[in-house]
Image (cartoon, rainbow, N blue to C red; front, side, top):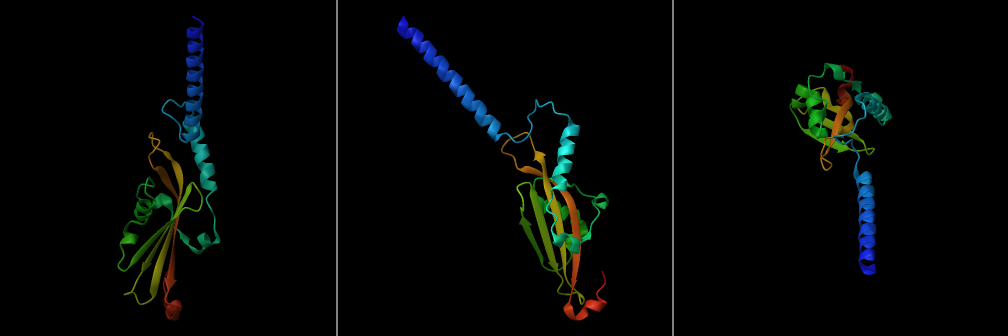
Length: 170
C-alpha cells in the first residue's frame, strides 16, 4: 500500500514538472498574440507606430526624393519585402535596362530594399536608385509563418552621367 502511494505522488510530481516546462517553452516561443488574446486593436496600432519611429534613419535616406505612400495604388503589407518594394514602384520598376535588387535587414524587425536600374540607352541618366524601408507588422496566426512586412518609407534618386550633369533633368 505504501508503494502505491509513492507511485501516485511520483506520477503527480512528474506531471506538474512536465506541465511547468511546457508552459515555459510556449511563452518563450510565442511572439505574436494568440487567437484568444483580448488586447485591443488600438494598443497594437500604438505599438506599430513606435516600431515605425524606430526605423533606422541613415543619412543616405536624405539623398532620396520621397515617394508619397498615400499616392501608391498597391498593397503596402505582405510577407516578401522584394515583392512589396516592386509593387510600391509600380510602372517605374518596369523601365528598360538592367535592374539589381538587394535586401538588407539592418535591425531584427526592419527590412531595406534597394533597387538600382541602369539606363544604357538614356543619354543623360546613368542610374535610378530606389530605396524602400519596411518594418514588421506582425505574423499570421501560425507560429512558423513568415513575418508580415509593412512599407513605411520609399524614395528615389537619379544619378546622371558625370559629363552631362547640367543637362540631366530630375
